[in-house]
Length: 204
Image 1 (cartoon, rainbow, N blue to C red):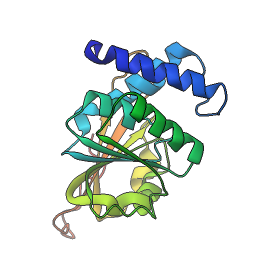
Image 2 (cartoon, helix red, strand yellow):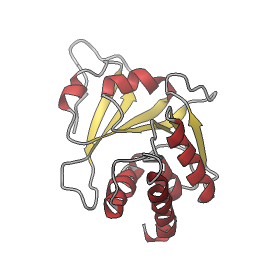
Image 3 (cartoon, rainbow, N blue to C red):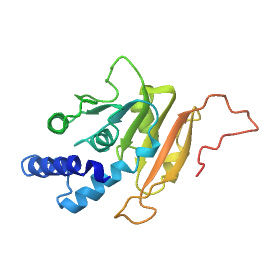
Image 4 (cartoon, helix red, strand yellow):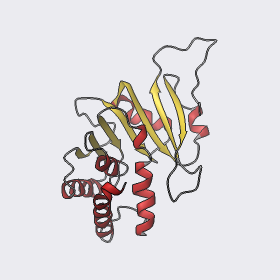
């Protein structure tokens, strides 16, 4: 996204600077940071729904910060239980003038903002059942939980409760091999599945 290149460069500058003192990310090479943090985060942009987004376990701000840069009209809550990482997120959001970002040190289970979210998103945080246990309650009735994964999470899909339905999308991330990134879109089942019908929980 050339129109936001300056902001992304500034974010990487700060990430590199902080990373020399605080272990924010194991990725040290700047070009790899651009692929694995910026481009990988932005791949989820078409999957966002609504105006209020929660990034669970944001770490050093991914995917939340790049998405907030690209989507200034949406509100992003970024939470993480690691104090140093959330301090960086708060610093970066302030430096970049991201008025649409709220960064809070909190566990997903304990976070109580007083509202639910159109989209809850998490990147490589936990298994699908664990994610839903941790943060499923933050999803609005008509909202979506976007779980960003590496390879197709076949076994995890089998363990998702029947009250949720899953749709897996392969993501294209420039600089990464095909098939190395997937998103699982998880939504509440609105109507109970009939005994004969079943549900398409593993639709591609």
